[in-house]
Image 1 (cartoon, helix red, strand yellow):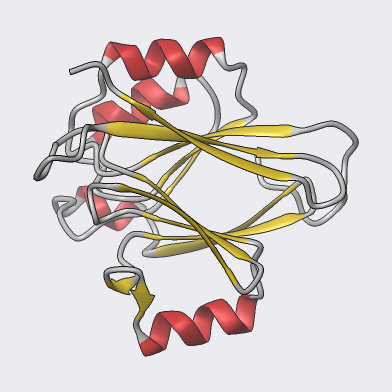
Image 2 (image 1 turned 180 degrees about the vertical axis):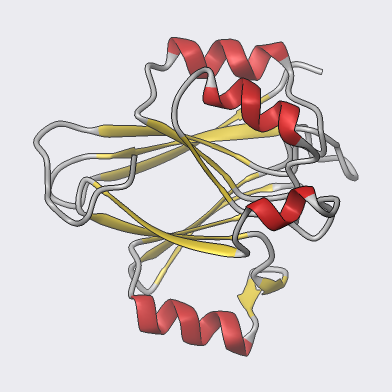
Length: 173
């Protein structure tokens, strides 16, 4: 699924999901199938192989492990990823650090990799914030609600000429 850097004409459409904790609602599967995705990114706290198996039936999945993923399942996934789609560099990490402020180690990684997008999870709430030319995107939790934030998942559209669009969809609880 990830490219090695060549730009393509047209758009890449990615499903973005995090914090499923072993729960993958049929509503998410249906939405991802209907969206005709080029791929799916899971930003950790997957919760087990069944979630990956079902998502893989829709599109190719790039996933990282999260702090709640059980061993030995979690060892199948890296702690972070650097991907390129349609010429757009995307970093994926479960926990940025403290809320929306990357830890020093994560900040150094971001500066070194120079991405256009950083996808993360862990907060269980959606975030779409652009800072210094980088889109920080958290699709929220598709599996477990925390506090008053609804469960959610997201989409990322990457068009030619650095055209970028993110969207969060709430699950109908």
